[in-house]
Amino acid sequence: MDSKQWNKKSVFAVISRQGLVNFLFVVIVFLLTRQVPLSFLSPLMNLSVILILILSLYKIRPNKKLVMIVSLLLLLPLTYNLLYSMVATDNKVLIGLKFYIVLLSLGLAYFVRVERNALKWFVKICLLQVVVMIGIYIFILTFFDEKTYLSLRLFFVESGWGDIYTFDGLFYRIQIKGSALLVIALILSLEIDLFKKKYFVAAFLLLGIVLAGNFAFLMGLSVYVFYKMFSLKSSRSVDRYLFKIACCVTFLAVMAPYIYQYTTSIIELKEDFSLLARRDQIKVLWYNLGETPFSLLLGQGLGNTLNVVTPVRDYTDSVYFEVQGLYIINQLGILFFLCFIVYNVIVMILHWGKNIDEVYLVYLVYIIYSTTNPYIFDTNHFVVIIVLNSWIYIKREIKKDEARNSCGCSTV
Image 1 (cartoon, rainbow, N blue to C red):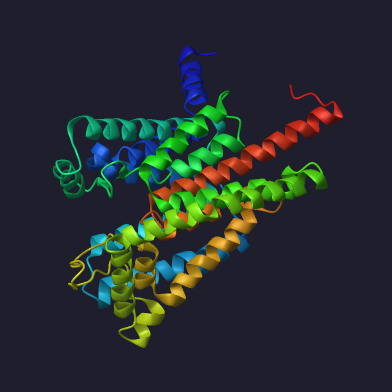
Image 2: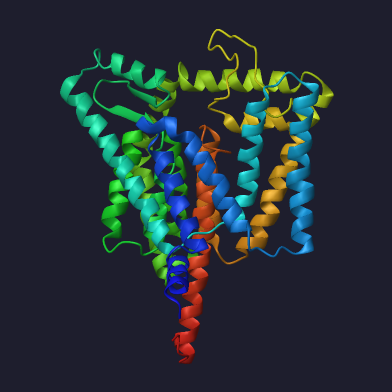
């Protein structure tokens, strides 16, 4: 064999299409979690999203049914809405294109998967995020107090890195960008044997979730924990299942006063801040959406921004809302938003299939804690879909290997 031909073949053997997909996925996760302080690299992350979709879709042979679903429920509504926005409104074209690419990417993310090693790097990068959060926490405790830390908080907010705050001067909530994937990384580290010390990894990720101080994170994680506790699949006998129920009821009976006190205190603390802001955003976005019957049905167009100032906030040209899902509805309208949701449900069922309750559960967990946070319908959402796709692929490969081993077939 000619040496040049051998070199070419060896290079392509190392740099395969799936290898590039894995690499781009790791790049996306790294840049997504390292928005503090590398937020200026967001264009590189967006480019990586486009490339990973191109590479993943390149060799797919879609059937006519799938092409019809993608065309009618995803491409047509989004493209019409974008054209309407560009032609009939004063919406900014670049913002409209940004949301068009984001929503289209979410719809096509179901066709992307990565290998086990890439998922391992996904968890490692999330661990790095926890290290950064711990570093910030220690830095605050060392050099600041309840009054002097406000200058640091202002710096983070003005830099667009998130927020750092405290209600009592004892516990500081490190709510910086890049933490939205910690819950998914924790669950993934428990469900797939990526690390030998998986419980240590999960405990470290749990520390990051606690430091974030996001009540929605804890709510979503609680749904997963309760499912695992009471799932019939995880119970070997009826007696063991009943024992779990008895222990849980006893625990809740003892802890109920403390849980109630903690929950009410959190709600009271947030009443004058985040909850007030969310209610204000809901009111403003719904009012803008319902200006006319046409806008209510078909939206205000992709890239729509508000020119509204309330006692709570100035929303002029804002594209960031805590209730980001409602902002997407504001742009798409009820009809097109329903098309988008129906598309996602259909493709999810077609690709994920049945008998994978844990995967659907984890997606539900993400929806639960992202709906009231600005993590839904963005790159975080894109990464979560890819992670779940890959999880299903790995589960199927494991089952195939078990089937081969059970029948004594050689895998060589």
